[in-house]
Every structure is written in C-alpha cells, then in structure tokens.
Length: 200
Image (cartoon, rainbow, N blue to C red; front, top):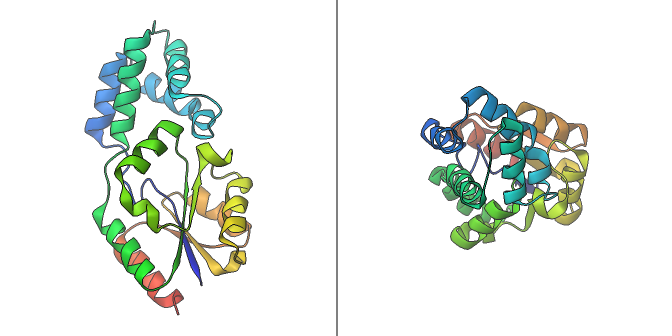
C-alpha cells in the first residue's frame, strides 16, 4: 500500500453533535424529524457544488413550509458550518505521523463549498494531503464512482495500492468495487492495526 485516502467527517472531523443538531432545529423552528428529512434529501446537490449555501437553505425552508429571508438563511448557514467544524485531534496527529513516514495522503470528502473554504482558512493540516477530493470542487460525491475515480487519477497510483478509510459502510463498499482497499473506520486503534499491517 502506497497511499491512504481519508474521509473527512466521522474520521478526521467529528459528525454533528446532539447540541449542534439542536441549534439547527431551533433556528429553523421546525419539527426535528421533518427538518432532518428536508436537510438530507437536498444535501447531495449542495455537496456536489450544484447549488450555493443560501439556495440550499431556501430549498430546505420551502420544503418545510417556512418563510425564509436573508437573515434566517444566514443563521441556518452559520449554524450548519459550525456543526461540522469540530476536529478529532487524534486523527490529525495520525496524518502527521503517516506523512513523516512518507505515506501519500489523499482526502475524499462530501463537503459544500462554504464548509470547504472554512476548513482551508482554519486548518493548516490540510496541506499534508497530496490530493484534496472535495465533492463541491470535483462535481461528484461518495458513493458515486466518479468521486473515487477522480482521486485515483490524481494520486497517480494503481487503485489496489490505495487504502480508503471512511466511517460509512456504503462508501467503503463503493471504493472496493473499484479496486481500492477499504477500511470502515470504527476506532483509532482498529485503524492503526490495519495501517501497521499494510504499510511497508
């Protein structure tokens, strides 16, 4: 194995906490179940960069029957960005150790443009990645095959020499179907065991 292709959220950055989810629900003023249904049903085009953040949130509000204005849209966008901004420092430290060993690092993340720009402005460890496969910039999102194919091309390595690490089973399955090695992230200890066995 010559490269590790990491997912961002759920591996390097933390998923939304209950507190952050509550802030979004209260800001929208909607029933939580209906809110999250609208949130996720409209998310893929936003992650792919097909729509902007304000347009995404206007669509969510319209689906919920909420009258939105610029102020509410801005509040929802800010709360959403904050909800995805907590880093797992153990994972960031692992990136440094792998880079120091000469392992090629890639990132493949379903991430909208506003959040990508926030990470680029605040997280210097992103520079450790040789390839940044950000869905909003490459026009495809996991588990779409094109997202993995883009990263393999940019890494310039055979697919079988790349280990893809993601916390979602369906995303790892899609990577394996294209010939990449795959690991479903459940803990740092489990990932370290796989890396120690796979790395030269």
